[in-house]
Each structure stands twice: as C-alpha cells, then as structure tokens.
Length: 605
Image 1 (tube, helix red, strand yellow):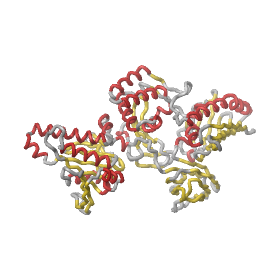
Image 2 (spheres, rainbow, N blue to C red):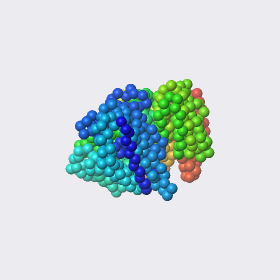
Image 3 (cartoon, helix red, strand yellow):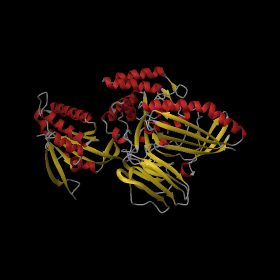
Image 4 (cartoon, helix red, strand yellow):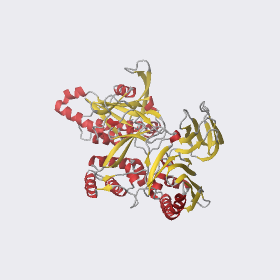
C-alpha cells in the first residue's frame, strides 16, 4: 500500500550539541510522546543487534524486528522497523539537527510508514496528525527549554511515572539521614536528594550516578557521593554494583554486594567474554529503597543512540555497499570497529589531521596503520565482506562521571560504613593503579620500656588516630593495622605523600607537649589486586610488597618513595611548591633481589 510521510520542522533555541542528549534519548522520547511500552524477545541470536519487539496498541498485538539505529552525533539519527503483526508493514524515522546561522537548531523529524491493510491506512494518519503531532511539539519544546538552560531531565511528568511511593517513610528517613550529617552543605544535599527521590523521573532515579547528579546540581562530587552512601545506611537508598561491557559500556550484570561479582562476564549484545576490573568495569550506582519508592521502569525503545553516548557514529552497511560521512569530532582517540568482526581501526583526531580518510572493511582484518584526521573530516566507508556489517566509531576515553569500584573502595567512609563489603572467597579482581602506603612507629619497643605499657599503648592508639585523620583528609583509606603498622591506599600519589609529611610533623611536635614519635613511611604506586582477607577487602601484588619494603628504609623523619611515585606529575609539583628535600639512592629490596631500585628519600627542610 502507499507509504505515508509525515514531516515536522522546529526552529529551536539550543544548539545541536545541547539538544542531542534529549532528542536522541528515544526511550524517553517515545514514552513522553505516548508510545506504549514494549516487550523485548529474549532471543538475541539475530545479526547485528537486531531484536524482536512487541507491544499492544488499543488491544491489538503489534510485532516487529528492530533494525539497529544509525546515527552521526550530533547531526542525525534514524531507524527502520519491519513488522510481522499489526496495522503496519514497515516504518522508518529520521531526525536531523542543523545549526542555524543565528544560533540554535533547525530540527527536522520525519516518519515514513507503510500500512499493512486498509484499517492501517486510515488509522495511521489519524494517529500521527491528531495525537502524536501535539505530543511531539510539547516534548520537543520542553527539551529545548531544558537544553537551553543547561538543565538535566530530572523531574517526571505527572502522567509518566509508574512508581508507587511511601512519602511518610521518605520524610522520616530523610530526617534520620540529616541527623547523621554535620555540615550545612551535606544537609542541603540530603534535602535535595529526598526531593529528587520523590519527584525524579523514573528513568533518572532507577540508576542514580552520584557524580552525574553532582554535575547536574553543580555541587562537589565527593560531597554528593558521601551523602548517597550515608543515605544507603539510613535506608533511603540501595546501592548496586554494575558490571560494564568494555565495548558497549552497558551494565551486563548487577550485584547488590561485591560478593555477587564474578570476574568473568559475557555481553550478549557485543558477543564477547571479558574480565572485569574495579578501575573501569565495575561502577557503583544507587536507586530508591523499595520501601520508599517502588519503581516500575518500562522500556519504550531498545536501540536509542543515548544508550551508548561514547559512540559518535553507527552505520549499517550491506555487503559491497559504500557510504560517505561528514563527521564533527572532538580531539582525542577513537576506534572504528564492526560489531561482528574481530579487530578494529585506531583513529586519532587533532587539528592538524587529514580532512578525509577511507576505510575498507574486509574479512581479512583491519589496517594496522592508524588514521590521523581533522576535527571536521569526511570518512568514506566500504564494506568488501560478503555480509552486512554494523560499523561503530567510538571514543576511547571513558566518562569520568562513573563512581568506579576502585575509587569508592579506597574511600575511608565507604570502608567504615560498609565494612562487610568484600569479594567472594578466592575471587581476585584488578583495581588498576593505586598508591600504597605502609607506616610503622620507630623504636616502639623501647617506648613501652621507657614510659610503661599503659602509657605507651595510649600513645600508640593516639598515633593511629592521627594517621587515620590525615589519610581521610587526603582522600585515602586505611586498609588495616598490623601491630604498630598501618596499611593505607590513595588514588593520588601526591595526596599520600602530603598526608605522611603532615603526620610525621604532627607526631614529632605533639600539640600536648607529649613524647615525640617517629613514624617510618613508604609509598609505592602501581597495579594492585583486590582480594578478601579476614572478611575485609584487602590488596596484594608486587606493588603492595614493595611499599612494605620501602617503609623499613625510612628514618621516621622522611618518606621513602619509589620511581613511580617520584615521576608522578603532581608529586613533582608538590616537591617544588613545598620546597621539599629529596635524596636519590638505589638498593636491592628483599624479595626483589634481581634488580636494584631507584628510590627517593623525601622530607621537609
């Protein structure tokens, strides 16, 4: 039957870059424009991420195969559906965002629909003109206002939320949370968090990312994260550990505890097995406790460009097909790959790159020569394989809005509030790079003889408080104490060095006029492995072993640091800005007898 074409045009205030996250979030857009919720078939065997989808429209079953979305960010996107049930046989949509000369965006939104039968030929134009058109205009104008204000889509429309609430319990738990907070800033964040849990959009509150929330609210990230952690202890929130695929970066599994995490994971969409690590592939997210707000989050679209914001372009090329794309990109590192082919093509974008490039996809693999292209360039693609290929151009840099497991487990507040959070016995997971600290009191045995057991014990316990306070103030975490010794970790080497210099000064010049103490300290930076030891999250590996050896070389008035710490850019800045004394030396270390290590003795002048 004859294809029906509907075209909407809008002149909007926001530029395409600001509008893209709103318009390209087709899951939310479909919901806001009245599209019924969908059911997705569990079978994922179709090629190139195709999925079978169904919904009910006025009691009639509608079923189709969803093709993969195609897009060039932030210029255009579109999708095609082939129906097996319902009033349609085929539907295509395309949105194009063109910058206006005087600022803003000219948005063109088009739909082509082919009816299956005469009732469909009558109903489809009526649906598009009388119902969909009004909702389209309302939603797009709302998105434009939010985008022009730099706002986030937080609040739910009255007719979209499917959650059920216990507002009395929410209020009571909010007051409980506030009673545990001690700064005006954290109390204000708790107030805003409670309001967000009550009024926030279903999609937004179903997976709360603390750092993104902080950025949306223009508040300190650490402060918002700490309030979310305390809200979890008070019963207002629950947290979960999302295991992210390294390619599509979507959550493949979710665990309510670190004990639920398995190091080996499979992604059905990307058809790969991968090993998780705390530094990138495990993210801490939050959601409302069901006793406060019970979420019923439905799906309205399965292939939204917004699901994979790191993918800047995605194109479906039939066998033998050619395509030319004009790509506006930011400087950085990218990768061009095909969903169902091994390997990839490296792409570097910089102002001095080429203005055009050509990539031919073959069954024998990708070119080993990386592309070096300009921020505005033309990419010619050719598929010389004997099958259709879904080509994906993605930015390699990961979002810094993720609260990674490596970061949060190195926070003292997390270790204090959730001491039982640990891996399954026997599980070992990489946490990436950490700075490991070991300390030990010098001459502590003599101290007990000199001033007596009781007094000496009190001084030792007090020294733990001084070390812990400095570690916490510099964004580290105490992992454990062993006799008079402390093991701690930091995400920043400079924070670890500065914390120890402050502790050594404080112990050497006690404010109460007591007996001075000397604290030996060693710092090393490198990759670590997380394990469970004595029911607590611990770390091991050569980085940890070396840090333990360095502490023994300290005099108690200096910090011994490895080359990896000394060569850290922020450490070098700290040494210069604080005018610290450094003395280089080298030596063999116990357990590392096959190599002499370059070390530095750092102290205040």
